Image (tube, rainbow, N blue to C red; front, top):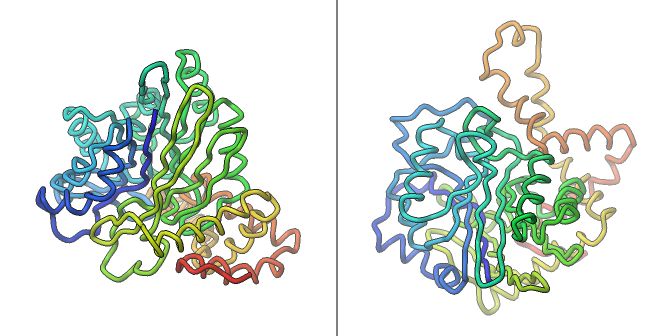
Length: 390
């Protein structure tokens, strides 16, 4: 059984709606890989609806929504499964989330990672070919729009829920694959805590862990025989013209799993995107392969990842998370309006953001700040798709 996984797909910043021919042309190269696989999975990073007719939720970060005509990009790929476990699925509340889910389900797609409550959001996609059966379990970190036992939303991360989902899959003879939306945006390396968590999913019984959300590619490893892809990068997420050109935002790779009776193996398909996706070949592919090997190498050493994460925490772009504590005051507590707490809630409620703040506090307490500063330049070079000489 061959399963192709792609990461985040969003159309929020594309100014003009496509016609069917334009959408098919933009997706032509990856569509061939989707068609060649037995099954395929992608993550839809925004819902569809008319922006002016829907009320955005209060949150930190942008609220993403696109005209329903952009669904032609998804149709051009014809994925088997559409993941909706991410931090933008409920950006405009319940109605467009369900309208988007129902739109694709009517057309025969399987939507996972969102629902009327947590039980429904955690319901996996079951894929079968011959005597091979897998369960795709989608989940995301707890930012905004996550479901509860009695309210709708996405499959917010819960170790207990993941544990039971893996166990339930194994009881019906399915091999569990975790499709996870989380991590540190813009960081070319996974943090030690993300590595510990994803490896734990394997220890619980997952045969693979495929991740996204960081808006840049990260490396991968084989842990106890199971592939762990720390982040595939964006799949198709065009930004304002020129804003992200030449950065890791516009690069990524699709992950293809070959599931047999005896093993699960991984192969990757790198690409870049602007107004369309170009699957890499020749010198451009050789450069990306070298880049991916470079960012994969430190994953073998937890100490190396810890040192790199220390440097990541010192990059000035991260300072906003630390400043969010200033929003907590007697005045705001007396006011009590949700808009005043959105940044602080996101800092403490999202697992990756809380990890960032906690690590900086430990760095200060343990005197590790100065030792981490030299690594900043290395990370910033990688964000520009440049491979350091060190």
